[in-house]
Image 1 (cartoon, rainbow, N blue to C red):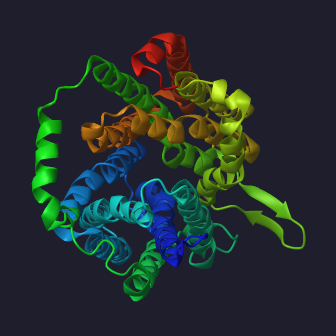
Image 2 (image 1 turned 180 degrees about the vertical axis):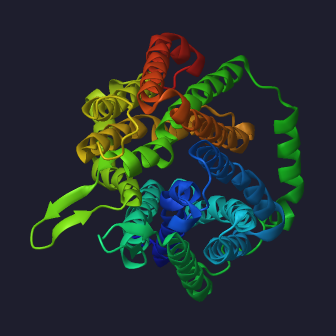
Length: 464
């Protein structure tokens, strides 16, 4: 008899992923601050331009190595072993950042995190899909639950680690001002989170997952079907793409091209927006019964996942409504880019409130400018990111499905590096100009995609 609910293994993967995202987003929230603060303040004393470039390359390669880790798991390791390797490698990387406050520790720690993420990230998602048979309607629901685990970890980590770095382990002078931040303890907490995820997974995976993900996918073909499968693969390989399939592939690359610029703007959250919040946003609030409290800069990295948790179900309902179903993919994604550009208007409001790009850090802007920016950017993200992944699966010819999804993910690789270069120009040009230039450019890109709606729909050949 078929069970109506989800298997318990889904919740094992949920909590494992939650702790991995806690580890990643926790360190991501403090990374650029750790790089830019002076050594006396608990950082590495790297100039802002170089710090944002390092951040951009790090987050970019985090999206590149899953291509390698996924291939190794499919052909040699199996998903389970790859997850073990990834979790241990990332936990070790965070420990290196905790234990060695120097350039060697930085290079080694970030390298381990990049490699570990490559083993971990693609394979735990693959296991979620393997829990369900083809055509099982519960699969979409399962990925929604799993996605909530991602955002729960991303929401909690910056809050908790921000309190550790800016309060519990921070050193203060007689006036109560922070003289040294406890960034290394933030990395320690991120490491602990990753090891908790590893322990949970290793303790329960055999019981709840059985043999799922143990053997490499390449070895799972039943002996009796090898010849048949080989012939089918040869036939698929030899068969050329039809004219309609070629047009669909071109459409995917057009979406990929536009997505690079969207994510380059969106990923300013961890670089230029973080540095702006640290120096020029009034983060002090008055809380009932607690008095005055200064919000850690890294805590603002929790705003986006909080809004995703709140808004994603509403978007899912809207896209399924009659109105939502009439909105085509190019319009959705182009609209997402326009909305992202509008979000930067609020940062321009923050710059204007301060009287322009003045260097006086005692002149602060309201934190609500930053919160509204994150809110609008989240709306733009929900219009573009999940919609883009969905349309790639719909447009890809079967024999190119995995490759083209990898191409889509590579948009974040290029975008994060481009975003790092954009953030590195803030000091030379001023935050106001950079926010304005990004805003105008992504709005123009969004309008261009919307204007291409009919052309793209013809290329998509029936997919909306």
